[in-house]
Amino acid sequence: MNYHASEPLPFFVYGTLLPGQPNDDLWGDGITRAEAAFLHNSHIYDMGYYPMLVSQSGGTVSGKLITVASLAYREIMLRLDALEEYVPARPKQSTYLRVRRRVTTKEGRRVDAWVYEGDMDLVEGMPQILGGDWLAHISSRHGEIEIWWESINSKFGHHKRIDGNG
Image 1: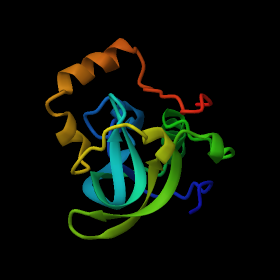
Image 2 (image 1 turned 45 degrees about the vertical axis):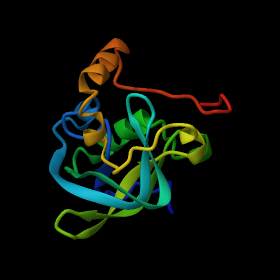
Image 3 (image 1 turned 180 degrees about the horizontal axis):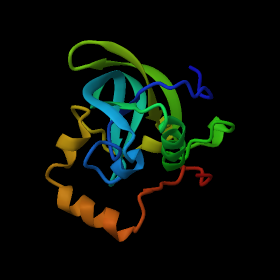
Image 4 (image 1 turned 180 degrees about the vertical axis):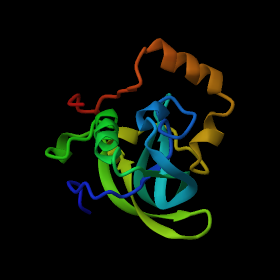
């Protein structure tokens, strides 16, 4: 997988970057298309108030395939990389990696997209979100999650690596 490339692919999002979620303002007016999509051989984990996706056989994650206007693409990618603590020049020190993965739209089209993936070490001991759908998972906790996002006064929900280097 090529972690450094910034080819203008759509983004597959599955958590706080979804429309209507706490980080959706990072898209600005740059979204030209948002469609339901699925990522196979992946699972998401509940990190408290946001999910983390990891590559793992057998699972399917629900989300949106977001296409961004070409004029806004670079700026939006920089914002998303900052949110996900992805540093292209230092992928091993990044919290998430931006990786190219093949996703499937609801209509069955297969499309390459950028996906922010976490590390298996970071999800150790965290509950797996059964069914791979963050929005369904938080539907009963929406108020609690909204209060938390407001209380941190930030759009960046950060977490630390187990080894303390996060």
